[in-house]
Amino acid sequence: MTPLLHKKLLPIAAACLILSSCGQTDAPTKQTTSNQNVTSPAEATALGDSNEAGQADGQLESSTPADSGAPSGNSSGSPGNAAEADSNEEGTEAEVPPLLYHINKAYNVVPNEETVDKKVVLLTFDDGPKEKEMIDGLIDTLDKHQAKAIFFVNGYRVKAHPELLQLIQERGQIIGNHSWDHIDLKKESAANMRKQIEDVQNIVEETIGEAPRFFRPPFGSGNETTHQIADDNDLIYMTWSNGSLDWDSKNKNKPEAVIANVLEQLHAGSNILMHELPWTVEALDELLTQLEQKGYGFVDPRSIGPAPVEAESGGTK
Image 1: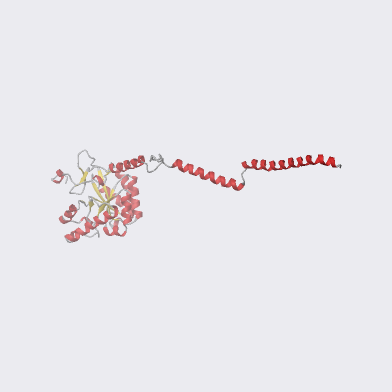
Image 2: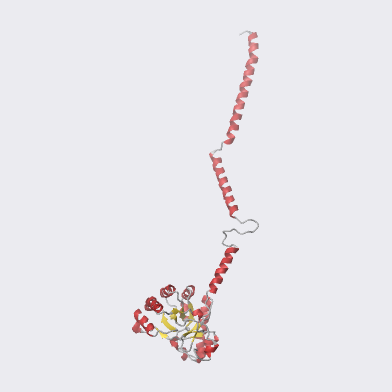
């Protein structure tokens, strides 16, 4: 190659070298630019977590009441639901029946007014609370017939099993006072008689929050002092006017005998004495069914109050 030709080609080669270098620089730049829209797997995972967190935050915000304090419509603590709860509580209180009956001197249930149904019986069970199975059995049958009863309890049994007393009350039945030790109160001193009655009032109130309204002396044995102590404690005193004789040994394990005994003595206002006994539990459904078939209703003990003044002066008292 001649020196002249070499001088002509040298600038051309230099220009090509410059152009080639410029092209290599542009290519990575374009590659980098195009890859800005592509996310690596690690970045994609992180981004997904971020999006889920964002969605969770959004859901949390949407379920949170506004700062204005307006309650959510689904909130169980909303004023609307609270008002409904109050209304339900008031409805429960309103269901307590008015005082329509009283206990007369023969211990029958007697209407306060002539317009009140007199063909009713009072159901009572003494000497408990004993066993959960028997209590549940009796109350299951009472519930079936939409009936209420008085469960006359002894203090020593309540002390041993307060949960059974709570069970009776929680299942909507009524508690009565049957003395602490189930002894013949008429044979006791006035002080001991008072203790036997008032200790039951106290333990029942401590256990279920309310004291009994009814009192029945064991064996139906009492005197003027017993009546006075009952009056001092605002207790309605009663024995019974219809004995099932379920406690009699000759009727043990004979539910049919229990039914027959009650029906034989049946009359309007019968104050029926029964006990927490297995054969009484067995007899109860058939007994209540036959009473209903004969046209008798079951008086709610809560509708029994003190005798009206006119009744106390004579007549039905």
